[in-house]
Amino acid sequence: MRKTLPLFVLLLTLLASIAMVPASARTLDEIIKDGTLRVGVNPNFPPMSSFGMTNQLEGFDVDIGRRIAEALGVEVQFVTTETAQRVPFLVSNRIDIALGAMTRTPERAKLIAFTMPLHSESMGVITTDKVAVEKWQDLDREDITLVNMRGNLSVQLLKDKLPKPKVLLVDGNADTIRAIAQGRADALVENVDFFLNFTRNYRNVNWRVLNDTIYVAYCGIGVGKQNQRLVDYLNVLLFDLHSSGEIGELWEQWYGAPMAVPIKPDPWF
Image (cartoon, rainbow, N blue to C red; front, side, top):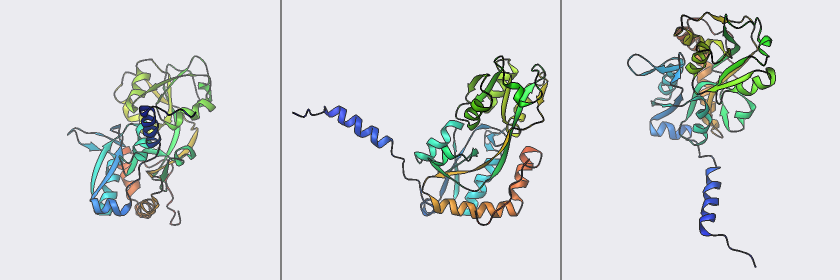
């Protein structure tokens, strides 16, 4: 005789199956009808985005989010997300788009959609004069501790390129530099432009940036999967903003230097 499962087991099974199904992303028409664009930004990621002196969000991503909302003719609602929360927030439809240096990867593309590149990122090494290394390959030693953030693309990448060092994982961008300043880690291998700002908080440390870079990647705007009309719209808008130089001007305004690898706008993306 076939046994009948208890009711609570059936309910748990049903809830688990529901939880695995992504929530439907709001379409372009729904966003315009609602009059609000929900933009995910990292509040601990200056100068991309952070809370300023007046406790209001500011930075490159914040200006980009406002520019997109303006083009759509809607209000912008910023939703704070840590690095590891960006994809889950898109999948669960808590945000419409995700900023915060969303590196385009095949793994993420299984779960979300991406626009054309918003900006590039060049991976390099931030360390101090206490660490005797001259190029990034010199870090592949067992007496080295690399710091990184949970959920970052570079965590897995460095397991392949630098397998010997110990790894210290922290929650926020500022925590990475703090760990090096406190002597809990020796180096950070990441996009140097994104993290140098934090070194100013530790002027007693002799910081070094190694001359060689590991690779160049490209960051797009993260969008809910199967939301192609929104992706198409953002691609057209990004092409215009790149072509006019507006994105480059905002980047230089917040970073104090031009984008290391400029994005070449492609009308057929």
